[in-house]
Length: 441
Image (cartoon, rainbow, N blue to C red; front, side):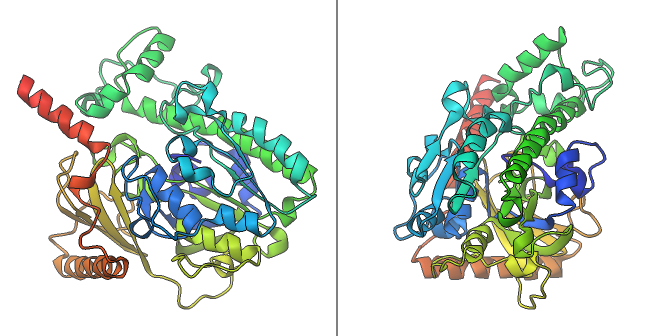
């Protein structure tokens, strides 16, 4: 589920009823409370999902930057296919990464019917996926990957539900919370769908950023219903209890905190902590259990292979999360993880169970400081930077982050860290736009 925040779902404590069907399904699933992206946004993390490796290892540290995997990188669709599984995907990442179809016997891309790659909803995914399941589920072992974009911009939920979570006036002249967004390059990129909203409203401009967030929440409603239809199909086919379902976001979405509006950059919790829900009753994964340990997308590759009883390639860096999902004690599970971004801006973070250190690797688009430290227990919204006041803790985490990066670079034979400002991909457009505005002014 592209761009879906965990904390905008009822099962994660959200105050709006965005996900009633998913919440009900989760009552007999297992919910991961700390599912952390090893990198953002889409293509780096999707590649981690299928390789079992962090972006630094598989080579894709930025979206639409470097496009090729490192030689010898494992790829789980191919592993499942070679093991006799019927493999399928309803997805469109191949339009960004042509090699993404490797290992899939059926790769169905419905996005050609849409103006934008990022506009394919789960209802359309189901139109392809449910017949596929009826043909294969219960008849042969299968591996099926579905990728939906309901909560990616543009936030244009159906008109009949568009104002479900916003009873007020989105054009109230006494509100101007959209002002910071209007000075950003992303506002320029959003003009087309904002114009559609203005046309549907019959007036403009939208002044309340809270209205845009409410639209994002309304986009979850049809996703939630389509997921219910998918779950019902598995039940009807009699395979729901013997199918490992992993439901997760590739990353989240920022709603204005830290000056990041309606996109998925920044290494804050709203972006790097998407949902993960798993269910496999016959495999011991059920019952509404919560998992507090840190799990990453690269763990899902290993976990999928382990669930199928297949050998895990030594090149994979993820871990088998089945014991955690089954409620078993795992004494040596990781207590921290690293995450990186190198698309709009370059940064690393080290996240523990209690704290997060963010270290910028170049200039920020949002006037963020070079170093940030947050207490995730006392300050889950990451509103207070403790880097100076808790400098001893910050220095220790900084040293740990730099040491782990250096060791991995040495293992990979890399002379320098690819996560740096010179390698950002899409962010060059924003910096060029800022430079042009400066020349014009």
